[in-house]
Length: 121
Image 1: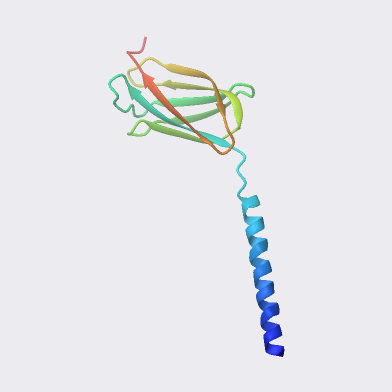
Image 2 (image 1 turned 90 degrees about the vertical axis):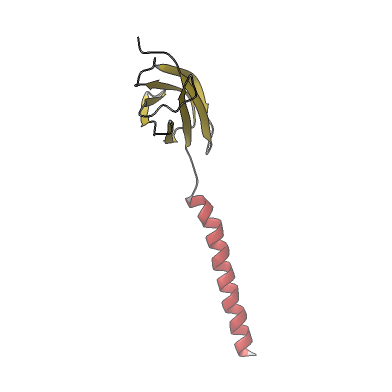
């Protein structure tokens, strides 16, 4: 009898501990930001590497910078939700591109394909 009641008590405490951990864990991992992942290509569809990408949160003036990798991809994380944002791409042998009025959603990654054209002026 006594051994069985101790086992029930112990398993009850273990179950309660596990439930508490399950309730607390999501709160610690709460996401409060958003991100942009872009893919920069030229008119022929080829990846544009080493392009400078400037992401500006228009209301606050906060600027984040990124550089495209060899696949033409850039990523900016930890951005404020909302907007508007302006994304500017420059560098290489192409004319600079600017995209205005982008809005970000909580815990979502905005996919942003960007095509650059022509030569710098």
